[in-house]
Image (cartoon, rainbow, N blue to C red):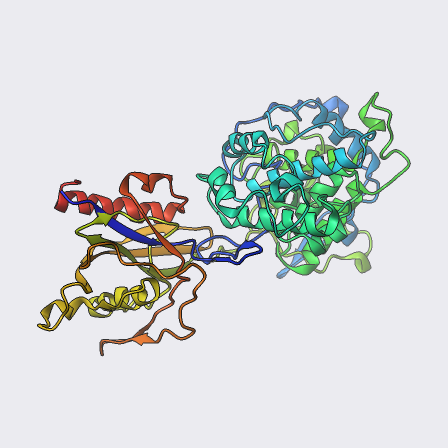
Length: 550
């Protein structure tokens, strides 16, 4: 039986030139750089870490003199604004670090290492790279999932350091690792745009900073692609010992409860208070950054404090069922105080908080304020699994030729016209549309679309998009060899036009046309996203039912 061949669109957001390789953000992936799950905090389910129980007799007197909410007047909640400020962080840090000393190795995270103030510039730069890789990998991904990927990445000699990732000659134009190699190591971790951002950031560090990440959060956030305020704070505090805060999802929740702050979580005023509280925890003081390692009281390194806050938020101060009796910050926690002793009178009306809103429930879990989640944006993509025969190979690159985000009202007739528009951008010879087989003047050696069969919708949910893929099995016929593909880097026309069958037109959004043919037996090794793999599995199942899988 003759071999069969299918074509998939190449890395649709990839552009190549003689000097560099770049990958732009995919509209199928979460492009939010700031992770709600950091390298030191699992997003969802993770193995519970052991925590130190603190006896009631050891509870420390509050040093914040917080006076939480006291009375409701209509829709307003009256309480002291000074309760949302950390005035004396020293004793709180001591309790936090004493707890962290007993749990920091509990989850076996290979990127978590003790801070060494005696390290030189090269060692600190390498440490920064390790933390950075872990931060990128843990965006939207659980700790347990990331550990083996991180280990393999660091064991790979071409990825072990920033210069090796980008080429030891420190030239951004002669990278040792390209996006294909990076994606191969990343395969299965998902959200592939993170890998491309990591490569782009490493190239920038090599080109402008001699292969090292900047040693301060301000420059790192401003100049390294893919690094925002949280990641810059985490990297620079852990690797370089800089006194900068972090505020990921876990610390946001922890600090909201600690300050008894019930305000819109994404509002600027709320974030300013939370960042200020996180900054107070790592503020430089006489007891900070000393080389004495005898006790937590004298080893208050900012990286350890930040990691301790993240660990506490992820393992103790959880979204549901927080284990307050195990929390080292319980003696100072505003939410815990309110849940146990109720509200106290406000001492000065001029100090009244103006940003909090009345909680809708009681207890510690009433904080932070809940907001209605936005429903994922829904999109429909027409995906074309293109097969050529009689000399067919099955082709699979990074995705199948796709017309993205089309109207939901797209009719079957309009959908059947999409493959011809896409193929005109992909292959060198002219392709006759699906109805060309009815013509009597069609040359024997010409390429025509002989059949188009619907596969059935495939649903794939990203963090912010509910994507419906509508695959169709497109069969090409004609010629003695697979149709030649246009050279890599040729872009489709700026305005591919509108396909309209008179029942509601749809604007096609054609992807870049770099493509290649891949044999069926090699399809599983191609770097495809999870959604595209689902499309292929559905199409393959249909193909095997009808063709017999030969």
